[in-house]
Image (cartoon, rainbow, N blue to C red; front, side):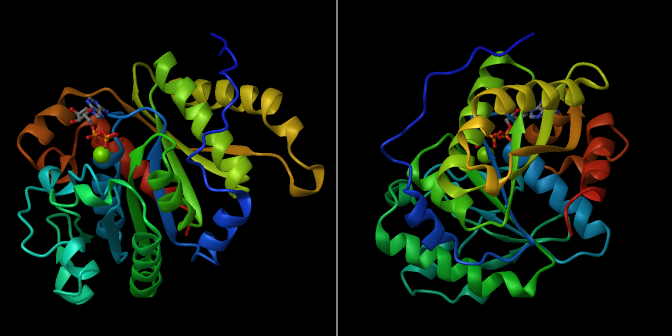
Length: 280
Ligand SMILES: Nc1ncnc2c1ncn2[C@@H]1O[C@H](COP(=O)(O)OP(=O)(O)OP(=O)(O)O)[C@@H](O)[C@H]1O
Ligand SMILES: [Mg+2]
């Protein structure tokens, strides 16, 4: 299958390269944003279970629910947070009070459902989020930012706070096209040259490699020639592939981590393997 080149992407909402660079500052290498082009591809599921796999390996891990407007990490983890990011932003509670232990042995900072007002990124929220990430990240070996889908300014800003980015994609053509759009915007507005891929819901072993190769081919054809030679080419790196597994839905319905509820399932094993390949 070949991917049709999507229409040129110059969203009004995307930050300018200078704004993005200013926002990025020098993010620490262990901060990874987990994002996607298309919604519902498994970002939150991947973030929570990758965190559990890393925590099991003895790492100190924080997952920040950065999908501020449509947060649902609390739902997946069956947590009912009394203190959320909103309380930290408004000064009602301290950051330490808002960092909660999650079932998988990692920590979470939850947005809760009362943060609809953050679905637009004001300069104030930008500053608060950046300060929060800078303050909290030295305490952990891995900080995962579970972002929303797409290329809105909220999503792009959150991704800009992370040194590494993981794009979750499924083999569906719509997901591939949207992943390509995300990768192109990240390369052109944030100067990203390394993008990690997690191919979720594969139907056969090896499909992740095929998806990576397809996306790399389109990037090589339509994005890399437009970039300045001295800044290098965009390289997609496969962190892992996770099969479609009925156990995932079952675990989500039971509001449990797959790694805890059904650790021997194909999807759980695949996520443990992906965690091993996480950049240090
Ligand atoms: N490997 C898989 N096998 C089977 N079902 C899966 C798999 N991965 C995800 N799903 C299903 O997809 C649903 C959506 O996953 P999730 O909420 O993690 O997506 P998301 O990308 O975070 O969505 P959003 O864009 O809304 O934040 C899950 O509840 C689960 O039912
Ligand atoms: Mg999600």
